Image 1 (cartoon, helix red, strand yellow):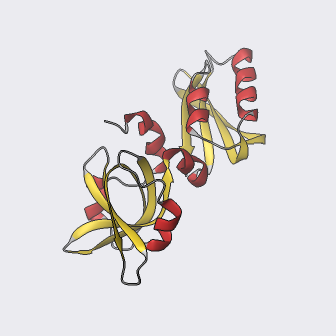
Image 2 (cartoon, helix red, strand yellow):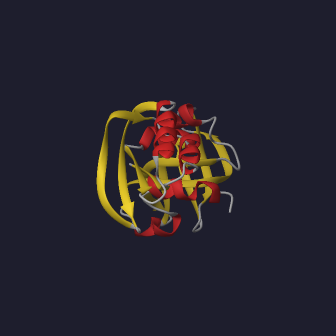
Image 3 (cartoon, helix red, strand yellow):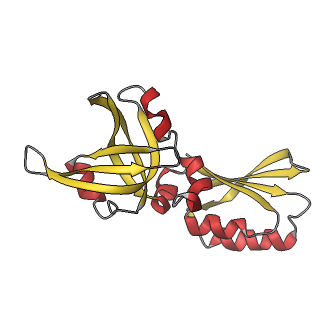
Length: 193
């Protein structure tokens, strides 16, 4: 599936998928990701441009309604075959079909930095050494930001303790996550919202 390359990252950002939309209450805030299959641009009653966006995720398909205020800010992202993250609300008034009213639309990369609150790194005690620590420090210095970093120190798959990085914050991105996964001894990278 075209979203596979983002699967691990999206799992920590989204709070629903297309299969769960029908069970969500009207007006409920959601964060959902998907691949754009089609964009139908129209003019609303006031003459403003808006769009109906057909999307698919790992579980099925859904539609997002993008009103004029959101459309103006996100129109560059609304391209077929583009993977996006939508922050919005549930709407199920249109013939009983559940849709998303988009408040914000992000590229996957932008969603990481815009929605993330922290980055949690699982460090494996048997593989994480001084060289790994030096690589980690250098990499984190290259992505300065405002998101706190937590380190889960694990041995034999069991978390022994958690350390909060006192003076180092990062701006997570796809590049950051890809690079950090390549450091010896880093077992997992989780971006939490």
